[in-house]
Length: 213
Image: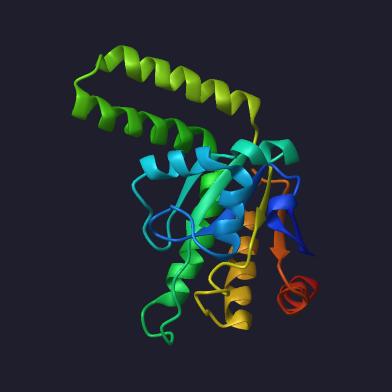
């Protein structure tokens, strides 16, 4: 099975193929990890995110990494975790889905990125009556060229929803580790999944769950 690692550090400083952004539903940046990733990646990330028209809670979308490519990061997965509302609004299901959909996106990033790019072009062509077939063909070629140069075998996650969204840390960590382990048992597309913790308390909780495996 693929390796799961837990480290203490800054997710924007990681040298891995993809990092996961704990995004909000607008995908337009915010505080915490979200703001740090947008700042490190630069304004072009915001431009691409704006074109994606948001993301529902529990779902995930993929973008290029822009300035983070200097660290070796090729992709950013934007996952929207739930806001904690006492546990009575399917928060656990939504958090599990945020991790699971991010992992599925990593495993199927080639098809997902091409389809995402094509859908963006279709929306623009619909509005501006562009040259449909030629534009779609060019879009697909560009997307395939990006994919060919940027394989995705390692991914780093933050602790989703445990910051400003106030999800209880131990419960969130348990959901995260269980979901990652379950996915990796069935899928061998990733070599390593890294949990990047922003403080010692978070690190200790996640690390204890991995060590107890």
